[in-house]
Amino acid sequence: MSTPAIHVQNLGKRYHLQNSDVRTWTLRETLRNAGLSILSRLRGTTPKQSRTQEFWALQNVNFTIQPGEIVGLIGRNGAGKSTLLKLLSRITDPTTGRIEINGRVASLLEVGTGFNGELTGRENIFLNGAILGMSHAEIRSQFDQIVDFAEIGAFVDTPVKRYSSGMFVRLAFAVAAHLQNEILIVDEVLAVGDSKFQRRCLDKMQDVARSGHTVILVSHQMQLVQSLASRALLLEDGKLISDGEPGLVIARYLGQKAERYDLSRFGGEPDAIGRFTALSFSSGEQTWPASVAQGEPLTAHLEIELSAPLHEGNLFIAVRNSEGIEVFSSNWSETQPLLELQPGTYHFNVTLPTRYLRPDAYWISLCLIRNQADSISLLRGLEMPPIVPSATSDKLIESRRWGLVTLPCEWSQK
Image (cartoon, rainbow, N blue to C red; front, top):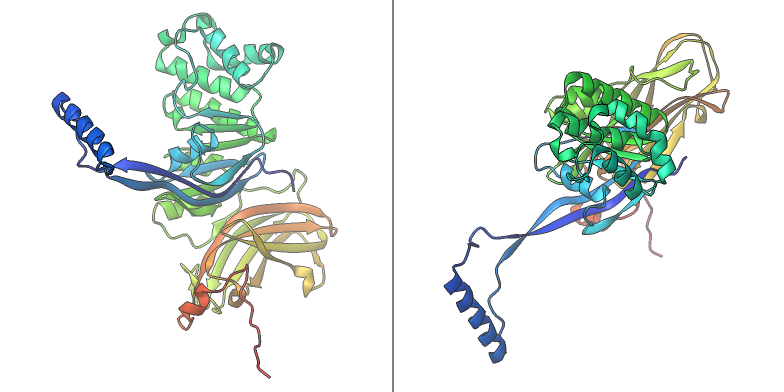
């Protein structure tokens, strides 16, 4: 597997907020309080401090993004999206956890972020490139494309403080998308441009991803996330509560119940003869349960579509936990002969070992191969129903267990 573009582990950001009873002091009160503070220090006592309250904007956030992914970041206002983007852009530092970023990051968090209003469009292009560590020659090679994309040819030598909001956002996006950045972060700024420009931006982001670069897109337009992103992250109250296929994540965000992943829009490799078209889960008679207790049945239902014969084929699944650690994997050939199939649609079921899975959130990945080696279709990060303790679980015992899985051991005394 290639080196991740972004790896986030146990990320948290805490702020200290003043209580609501804090107010603005008059000059007389300020001098009085200063005198009391000095008197307290002379007496060896501690002056009364203003009370503060801790606020965690993010808590225990974990995810990994691979090069070439377009990831939609969604959530309601105040969910922690802007804080996460500032951490990824290194505008602020995390309180807990770590962020590993491989590559240069271009952040478009606000219209014109990083621009100097007194400088011309030309000067701002070269300034931004220099900040990214690019040489004058490298910036020059992209200069004409940036100007053409932004449609500011007649105003390239005009100070940007005189630009309209539309010109500003066109130039800002053009600079971020065309300079040599491995990671592009875009936060709602496309709402400023007209529909024609938005379409060009979407096409450009797809081109950036196809070239192996990574795009993180924040938007309240769910249709945009659904059509553009290959994966979505959902934040709620500073916590990552869903990570996977955009359709299901969006359904959870909107409070809808999704009964299966529609994977038909995801193709396989360029010369693929087959692809996954659907994934769903069931527990007994229940379709896509909200959660599954340890030991209860849980079955994954896979649907694949073949456009040509499949020889020596195999199906793989892998399951990872909320910390991104792969807990186990399995494949069809463990118990069955390799697949020999003609073109058509096929359905497969795999029973998952919930008895051994610790209570946690889990994600499943799928892989279809041929000739025992060539990948036809690979999909990662599909959320499955979380595992919860059974009704008969001993809470005290459960709290003292650790490790990736829960395994039954036989104890005895001689």
